[in-house]
Length: 188
Length: 193
Image (cartoon, rainbow over all chains, first blue to last red; front, side):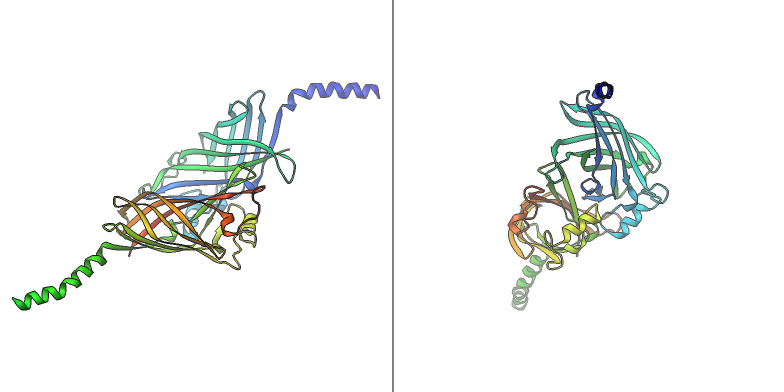
């Protein structure tokens, strides 16, 4: 009995540094990945993707962390069914071949305890490029209904679609795409 | 000469009438490039949740010399979409847009605000859930061009507004789950008739 107690204490002590690392799972119901692109210089056209899933690891004391998310591109929506068909086609997201967009980062930026950015790699249409995310409004709370710790933020980034080989219709539609992701993640 | 003068006098009102009509331009909203959307804060500001409406129709009249104009837009609330089918059902339900009873919402304005010959705002009335309340729209990036592909005259802009949904009786979830303040964002493109 005493041996087991001591063993537990030793194990707990050994695990203590790992406790600073918090694991969060992205809540797909309240996480939405959207994009906006200029049309004819006249208006910003927006769209959104299907489910966003993934994990976020934070170590606030060490100010390190990682992000690993997958976005379902096959359910891209935007304005009209004809445009959605176009966006799913080979010229754009080519969802038959590349149904998933991924973002991975092991380089989070902190300001105090708050995450304010991340440098990582975005893989879209099979092309991987470095992308810098800006994270605003990062905050954590206890979810009022589930009582679990939950963090939320607004994530934004600008990418040039041509860098991912998405070069069609540059005359009508801007190259620069603004990505906005509302994210909520629940601690595991 | 007298006859010609009489003719001129007779046609003068017609000419004035014609010029009045010419100064007023009518535009039809392009539904494919004019998707009304909203943003709302979730869980006391943890994240911003978004949704949009796939179908809307509308007419805009603009008289740039008189700096007047009108807007009349109808949004099909049954075309509401978010990123999640489960959330769509919640938002279409009785506690939110109640689409079974209120399949449309409308915005009407006969009070456009100009800066020079650019539209920069509109004061009007939003009818949602059967309730009509005044709303002020902000209009940014108003510009008009000839579409380089179909060669038609068109204007575009980004419209934003902030409303309190409780004023229309949409009270569910305030303030614990989601905020009262809703930001409305409408990119708009409209073709000259």
